[in-house]
Length: 371
Image 1 (cartoon, rainbow, N blue to C red):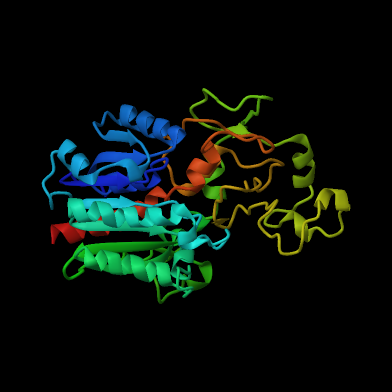
Image 2 (cartoon, rainbow, N blue to C red):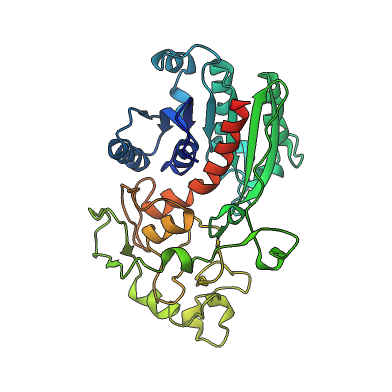
């Protein structure tokens, strides 16, 4: 949807800007982006310069920002902001993590959305979270307690909420990524979630007009041979981010895994190659399949290329996530055995909302504002 930018928006926890791309494509003009990670901020600045926008980029801990001062800086009166959106860090609630909930200070960042909404009084609030938030416990040790308290906090701020767990593959993203989205509006909530367009092949029959879920082969096939990782180098000037980070020993392991399978399933291999993997380790050393959507892209693990004996590159991650090729990531490309300060390029993508999914939701919000 390429509507005129009639509505404004403020982005919290902007990350690499995946959600922001979709919001802009739906017709919103983003007034400011708030993000603490320096590499993500450099990615956002590169996008702003390339697109010739005047978006204000604020590199800061969101807890140190006064929403009242920000509102004045943006020349907004209360109630003039059309959309407040963001995806607070989700490690506290992730099913793949320790689920520390509010015991982890990152969990408290979720309630920064409420603090900003109380001052700005936006017409719509859009929040993205992992679905683990639905079962995360709080001080009373009740499942779902934190999410319940979040909805109550929004209600006390004058907002009614609708929420749904959404699968990215249903909206044209070749990835089985499930995330929780909350849309809140003042008073009666008239928002309707967008209908899915894609579905598993078995559901694409005469009764429904769904398109089959996309496989990753359709989006990464024409990228060509990636550049090799230069030993000891983490920062790259290559704007395509198509860099191979595979160590020689991992390449040997990858060669033993059939397309669509994972290393732990190859029980016939020498134990030195399996490295103590258990049968439940189905995402570690996983080789994706060209005809299927990818598993959820994650920060700690990089998946294998379907047919080449290497890890996927950051650019291939971007293709699977739905980023346009014109988008440039800034910051380090971490080797599989190294560490870097803050977020490397693979993690920038894995932490973000797929732009096509964000556009589908933001387009429905745009329609809601029109009504």
